[in-house]
Length: 129
Image (cartoon, rainbow, N blue to C red; front, side, top):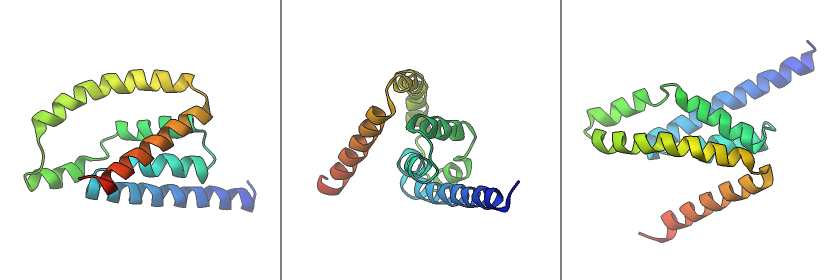
């Protein structure tokens, strides 16, 4: 393996570690991180397709990545288990059908949908109460 290839791999690993840290911090602080931070970084900095970035991010969520963050919120009395369990049941179904739909879309269309959703959510949060 050439030194250039090793350097590129190390740079990618550092980027991934930093993105994971920032996404984890934002997730713990304000409940965001996965889609809003990780997907764009994978696409625009690491050359993933939109589909690869979304699939990789979803795979990351399979692991118990939020356990410690949830534990802190639970200790402070800020977890509504009933609400979370109810949403989780339909989230599983929605995730399944959403991924089947997204895989059939071309990359340009899915990027535009992703971008519009982020803009609309951001505008709502900034300009409306």
